Image 1 (cartoon, rainbow, N blue to C red):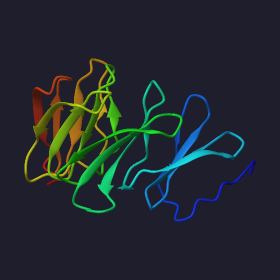
Image 2: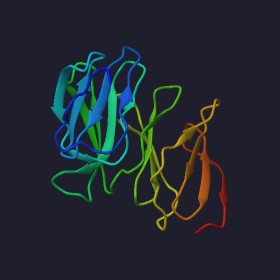
Image 3: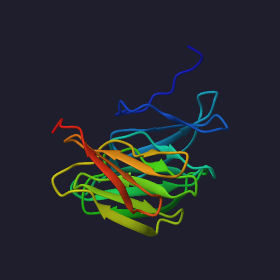
Image 4: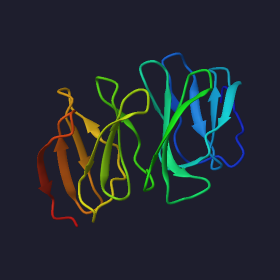
Length: 178
């Protein structure tokens, strides 16, 4: 073991690693930690959300977290933090965000929520589009992005749906696992 860094109430989520060797971990209290390659804390920030998936790092180094509000578990939140540890913005949705955030080739932030909605935000946290896949499903896995920029999501009932990067549905397939 080269080094260890103790985080109180550490979550079991794997860290996200940036190109410059900074690791980002979140504890169960919603605090985001940046740890350098020598095991030293660079900064930490209270993100004020309960996180269910690892952070996603954008091309510009922005760290994106999704989860639910510490104050209201039914309220979903996306939080963007710059690489210096300053909160850039947050975006609220009506249901918990359990999926890891994906980023499309044009820097569109893509995620789903527990009420069956798929969202696309621009890099400034503004809604580009929102689609309801079905009110009977949960989107709790990370959206997959194809090389053409199409978005594939899978749901808790075995429904797989493909959208264009602009949010138009291309196809859906029921695997019969629901």
